Length: 400
Image 1: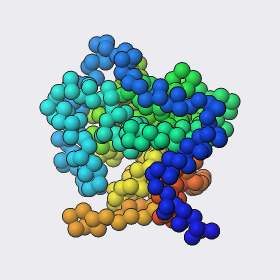
Image 2: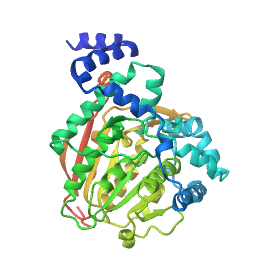
Image 3: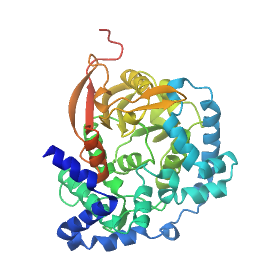
Image 4: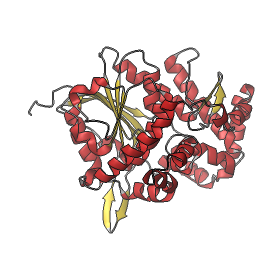
């Protein structure tokens, strides 16, 4: 049966996958008239977004200043925190317009790009909707696959949340999604709600918890956790400077009542983290966090894409800084690539684990959210995609 399935998957072209998706839609989701909801979600939402107050306009200057300071400092950082060859290629290819506007301090161009970032090429495969937007523009049948995936994710979350869970996501950045309960909800927003529920449950008894996400993408997980909690939380998001521009814009525009710290806006003082709601810093600032100052570290789908040397450094820092939980979702495939003749290897998810003397594994289970293309990809590579949770059992100062 395994060989037969391999042959079947090999024959599946994008068109045949689309036809298969249409059949699933007809039998399972046509009753919801979801295609009409997707068409509504594809419309240009920018005219209906009101953001023109004085505070909103100041965001773009802050982004320009923070970005250029981070890039100047980035030239001097240690190797583990440098941008990898793969990501540098993406920056050189897709981020040209965004980077040019930042370097030229062209806030007008920057504003136009960020107000449409969910549909810009620089957010492709970053969990923000560009992938779905371009796929639906290229292949009209893709919208059926989109609907099937959306409802699959929603039903998974529904089981955890119970009843008819409330989903929220701002229209900022011209988001792409399915019209649901009066809002446009991207596929990935459902995933954000699922993990927000788990993370907030883990930290239920912690007063003013500190969460640190490494590789926060567009900021969707940050937004969802903070907008679904009535407690004070400090959320630290670490990423490369280009991605921080996007997530900083999204969060500052979506949550204007929160207090933000951006790079260059003040020191990252571990003793004063509770003075801020959201701290957005370049990844190379991680070592500045004090011992056992973060209650939960989180990473989704990026550690296993990095150079193993970089991930080893992240793990070493997490072992020192984390005081409660380390959660990550990463694939178990192993890849080899070359950068200027040097062999680079990644670290499969099951190897991304902290010191067992100080942390115990709470669980390892298959990732619950996966698109059809992901499943086929990892099937061929004979590697699954897993979620992991570790809990600290001994302090960082404890010696073996």
